[in-house]
Image (cartoon, rainbow, N blue to C red; front, side):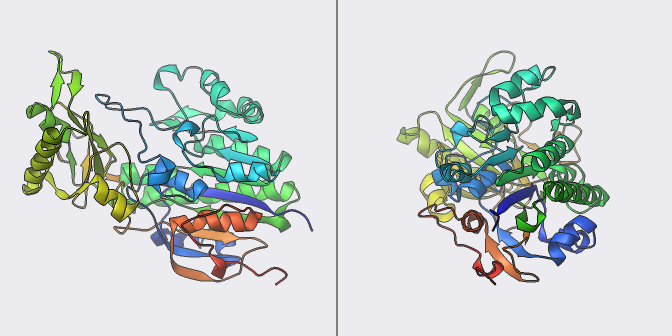
Length: 432
């Protein structure tokens, strides 16, 4: 019997409400009619792309992976660098386990894998100041095998509103799957997520993005067939989070500056901080420069509690570090996590107004976002088809932590002490 292959496509922000339309499209429809899945997958807090994609390849909670935010903590920068480098991940990944078993591996635009030991690795990474020659970025962070394919398809890269990666990623995947067909391949596309951020949760632009993703699914399946591997390849479509509409942008750093917790020069440039809100979009992570200072801790706690009492700020709850760990398995170098009322997004600005509404002229945030508690709003999904999956079996609910154990079972990888479970209801028994 030929060795099983696994292809995982992450469709960022695909949610259960999309399934009715998706099922009528030829690509999604082929997966859904010949396969199975989970209609609602419980994600994690905060519902952010990078931390959740790390969970999907490690099977661990954020308190263990070390990745708790999309962006690096860079106080004073309105657009911090994202957590691209694999060095952010503190636990082994499925790629590590696969390599130990002699399996070939591929990752295309999968978050937080820059520099990872993967046979064909073309990670998601960019540099706004050095985008005139992406070769300088990708030669550093791709694997040697990945960089060879990067050079073939670099002309597909664009920039709007960040690197336009999806078509580039699909071209890479088509080429690598057809000519290399690694044992383990993970691929991430963002079209649906971007459409929701800039146009709304359910709208014609999102439907258009779903149709585009459907065309990509068809192309990936064609590449698998061209490689002669269709009959022994398991194909999985997963997603990471839903979206909520944004009703206000809250810049706690403006208030921290007004309270003397952030200092600036005459031009408004931050020179120092004692407390800082690191945005996680619909939640905020409060960093203290000296978290062991009881006076500072008490000052910030009392300030946050006072702000919570004023409805215009839209703060639902304040979690201590211990509470965030206990309730959400979330940990990091923050002292508090602030959760907004539904629709409150936290910004990085430390000058200007603390509260900015979408109707205001100076509003520059997206109109829908995530980073909220996973129980809220539309839920992500898992779709699967292939020789190891049952047909027409649909679980109403699952957990994001169940995905990695299921991937590992398909590949016969032993990864100990995972908190999730294998979604055995979806799998065929050996020989069935």
